Image 1 (cartoon, rainbow, N blue to C red):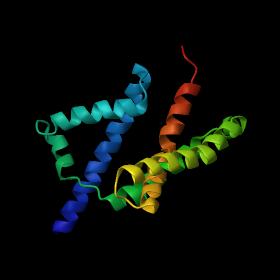
Image 2: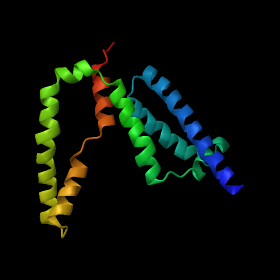
Image 3: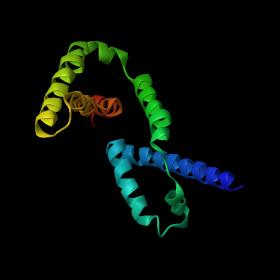
Length: 154
């Protein structure tokens, strides 16, 4: 019975967060702020109000494991970004994209890995892996930024 209660709390919390995210998107379009900025503002406000508002108390019991984020949320975000990406815009900018994606990533990985290797006792292989992790750009953030800058102003 306890597992059912936990499942109901998790599903209720996620549904509440999705409703809040949808409302945040609508508000963000009227205020003309990027969706991610609005999510941070709303999230900070919810964290402050979670002790006062009974409906938000469900969020205290909501815990997300790293596996849930890695295997459920991240692939969904990357898929959604790729699905909504304008292929013609990508093809138009293919040279700068490939220049940044391949040599830029390798150069950044080497610089970060070299600095970490020289500044710490971390082995070179691990330092280069850390450099690769830190150099990789979040594709969701790039898509959000490029779609925001592609919108006509006014």
